[in-house]
Image (cartoon, rainbow over all chains, first blue to last red; front, side):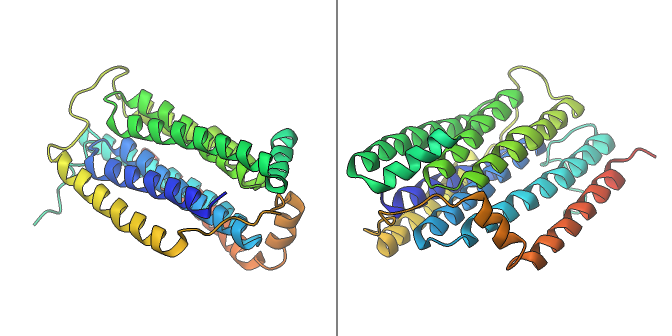
Length: 99
Length: 181
């Protein structure tokens, strides 16, 4: 198996995630796209860990999973706060600080 | 779990096994990419969450093909279990409509698509240049949970403890931010 198979899968998922983050207005959908991006990075880490026969790849993938869990918790709390204050989670409307 | 690990192990050892692993991989990759595309284009928030579930499962399967069992199980537990429930709660608490919703996307979608395509082109070109014909080692062994735990609790003990503190901080932070008063 080529290493590139996994790297290309990760790159494609990463780009789809970028598209999602840039086009979605709904806060929850943006968070989902960010999860997609983090997962594609994890594929890279595990693939390089398998390639170098080193455990660090998998360990760092686990760390990324834990940080992503923390990120989604805080992110959803912020989205809920925006919803409570503005009655909408349309991120295009959250432009209070726009100059 | 162990059956799939054996397949992953066998696949590394013989030519025929490598062929089977390749078929596995391409099936998984096709499912992941299709589901990811549906996730960013669907107009239904709950469907998007369920498509994300499919992508996360496919990523866990990719880990198994790569012989990373513990990462696969953790992916299943944390993402499929915890994060999906959190996201669905987010959908519920923000009272998104269950069903087709209009106005989920920005008007300038093509700009996002442009950025994604250009990023993909740059990454694809550089990956092709750097790892064009690099193969995974043929005698690749699955990385066992024992190795992972030995590594986490010796070499990576400091990042691990920092991560514990980060999780606690995120927990308290989320409660403080979302609390109603």
